[in-house]
Structure formats: C-alpha cells, structure tokens
Image (cartoon, rainbow, N blue to C red; front, side, top):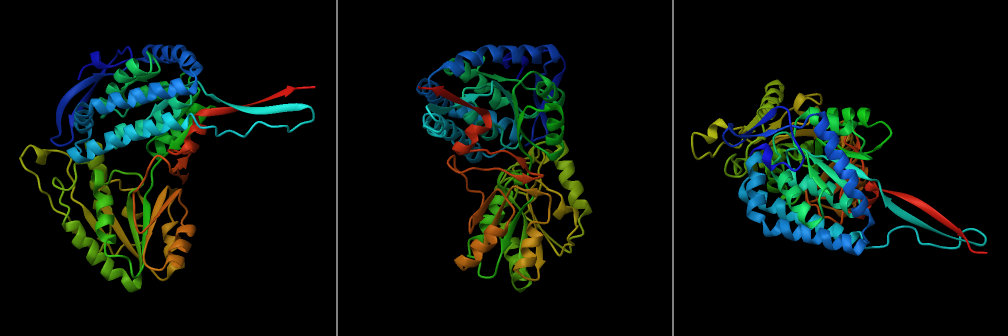
Length: 460
C-alpha cells in the first residue's frame, strides 16, 4: 500500500504497516500534514451541501448502491480487513457482510418519519420539527473492527445528510481506503473521505472545523477528544471490561459461548465478556468448565492474533502482574515458523483473584476471562458493577424472574440473558460511565448526527 491509494491529499512521514500474523512489515502509508487535513475538511464541507440537499429517497438509493458495491467487491474487502487485523477468513467475511447490512438498514431508516408529528400546539399556529444534518462529521475508528466500526458511524451519519471524514486506526487503513474509493462513485466525490494517519492526524482532524466527532477507542483517547472538541457534538464509545454473571443452573452452552465470545477477534471486542462472576456454590464448576471450553480454542486455529506490538506487550504486562492462583491456557496451533513471530496470545482462564487484581480492574482486551466468587446475588451484582466502564454484560442461569432481575440491576447499556455478544442494526448499543456516551445502531443513532429545528407558522 502506498499513499497513492489514499483519497485525501497526503504528505509528511510514512507509517509502517505490519501483518499481525507474522509481525513483518507489509507496506506503508503516508500521513497528512496540517494543510492536507484542512484541505480534506474543506472538500467535505463543499460536498455535504449537495448531499444534504438530496431528498431522503434519493439519498437512500445512493447508500444502497454503496452497500451493493461493497458486497460485489467482497473478496477485496475481506483481504483488506485481514491485512491489518490478521482475522481468520470467516471472521473477516462475516464482518464485511455485517457492515453491508448496517448500511442498508440506515438507507431504509432515513426514509421513516421519526420526528414529532406536526400539529396545532399554539393558538392559530401550525408547528413541525425538521431534523437537519450537523454538517461534516469526523469519524475516528479503532483497529479491532475496522470496517464494522466504520459502518456503525457511517450508516447514520451519511443517512442523516452529513459528509464524513473517516480516520482509521494507524495500523488498519486498508478497508477505509476501499470505502472512500467506492463511496466516491456511488455517493459522490467528497461525501466520504478516508484520512489514514497516526494520532497526530486524529488530533488535527478533531481540532479542524468539523461539526461533530464520533470516536471509538480508549478512555484516554476519549478524554483527549472531549478536551479538543470543546462545545461541538461528540459521540464516544470507550470500552467495556464487561461482566458475565453465571448462576447455578446455567445452561450447558454457557461455557462454550463465553469462551467463544472472549476469544473472538482474540478478545479485542469492547462488548466481549471479560469478568465472569459466580456464586461460591458453583464457583469450582464454572472454573473447571471454562477451562475445558478454552482448551478447545487454541490460538491460530480458533482465533487470530492481537493487532500490534503495543497490544501484545500490554496483554503480557497485565498477565505478568496478576496474582491469579489458577491460570489455564488454550494452547497455540500455528502452522509455520513465520506465524510464531506474530502477535499471538493464548486464551487464558484466571481464577482465585483478589478484587483489585490488575486483570480484573483493567480491561485486558485480549483472549482472557477472569473468574470471581460472590457470596450471594447482591454481592455478584456489586462485583459486576464495580468497575468504571459500563458498556455491556450478560447473565446466565435458570429461572426467568431471577435472570431478569439481575439483568435489570446490571449497570450497562446492553445486557444479554443466556447468550452474549449478539447484535443487529435494529437494537441500540452504547455505554455509560467510563464507557462513554452516545448511541450506535438502531434508529436512535440517527439523532447523534442530526439537530432538530422547530418551525411554527401563523395561519390566521
């Protein structure tokens, strides 16, 4: 990959790209200087006027054509997604198709009348509410799900009539470049611009004259965005460290599903289960069954590598400091010496932990599950709600009333009962506390990228 593939004019230093499966350099991409960022924002401002002026039906048809173009180029997008993430083929293909589905959902959602109905609310007046686009949105997405996180932001932002500048993570620019290429032909020039680069690029973009910033990433990154964005609209999704409360009588599929979700994408999922919390009555059984299930998911066969050298160092550092009395591993199943040089980590089950253990209080963001014992259900809920993040959680057991009571008590934006990490465009996703604020997915996400205008007309 070279800078010639990038949709915005780029200058300045190159970023080296590595293959997470091997750790080897796979290419480079140029990063924009301040002037180039400003030029990209100016182009987006010019494009958004025409895009916002389109009737919703026509905008919808353009978005459907964009989704069709992505699906028609599925092998190319799968290869791009794998290049920077090392995902297995089936994961990458599923995520590209999921992204297509999200775009098609918003192509339809924008045609629905969701604003307050017009009516006679004042004497001799008729009033209605117009939902108008914000303008230019800076969408800054992470390396764990490059195309899916892009689609979550692009879908509602574009459908609402905004132009978008998409800043992919430094290590995964590949699918963003393809999206910008295909958007130029289906949505129009400048409606979607890809702006690869490093953290300096992202900071310059946030400080540029955009109307809104949608950021998915770390808590530290979210704080930095909030400080630089000032009074402009921001939407933040900042991670999870999500609990899974496993009660006595949990269904047999619990353990395979928890370990499968914890190792999908090598555990690099904000909403993935991270902290299993049980009652003392079923603690030993849960630890044993999770260890058995994890042993069936060796790295390299069941899931891919971590994304980059910093991530594997961080993962190893957290695990080197844990005081876990019990630690079991999934093993490695790598076919070739070169793959062993990549950013591979075994799946881990950590048990017999103190409440303040680094692996409990820190989002590991890797293929790891901690297991804690609670004295009773109230204690289990306190442990589940005992970290700063509040993105998602799950509860497993028998007895509908008890399960729903725990689900209500969990402080999270999304809760699953006897299942986990299952999402679709119709259902909202968003965090609380240190997990950020704002809504992804569902028709509610449209309002993240719109502002209401009340119009009142004197009729007498």
